[in-house]
Length: 80
Image 1 (cartoon, rainbow, N blue to C red):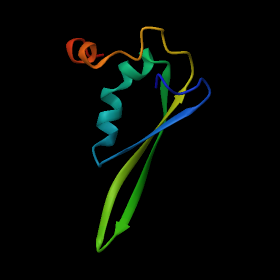
Image 2 (image 1 turned 180 degrees about the vertical axis):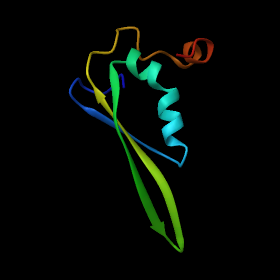
Image 3 (image 1 turned 90 degrees about the horizontal axis):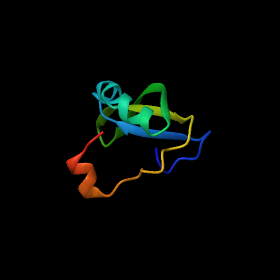
């Protein structure tokens, strides 16, 4: 979300557990100026497989605070 412009969208492709992952990320997304707007189910068909995925759509509704994005060491020590 830090690199998305206000008014823009971020779309994350997730597996079948994508809805639970999106729910778990709500606090972090809010801190970064985003809001979840939709969860779309989709099927990917390739070489005799039918893979179910979720597209999680986030809207960027406000600016990201200046302290984000953070460096990798800080992310590990203090996750959102």
